[in-house]
Image (cartoon, rainbow, N blue to C red; front, side, top):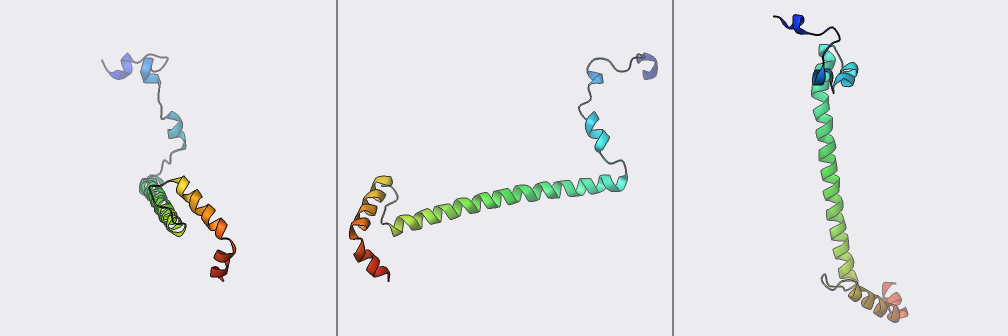
Length: 105
């Protein structure tokens, strides 16, 4: 018996009827040139997106780290002291007021 003799007139039954790529097939290119272009271009675009995301995420993290480190040094806060030491140093600088302003000029 061949496959055509066993198929029902209503079409496929059960899970055979479910085709998750049916909508995708409608919009995919049928020509060889467009398919090959899609095969080459899609991975390049995806790879470029992933590499860009990783680069900018790492760059932002590194820049934030160095800026925070410089800010702690500028205000005399040690890395492990936390916010209390920063507030204490800020009060000291606020109390110095005019003396600190004259050294900047």
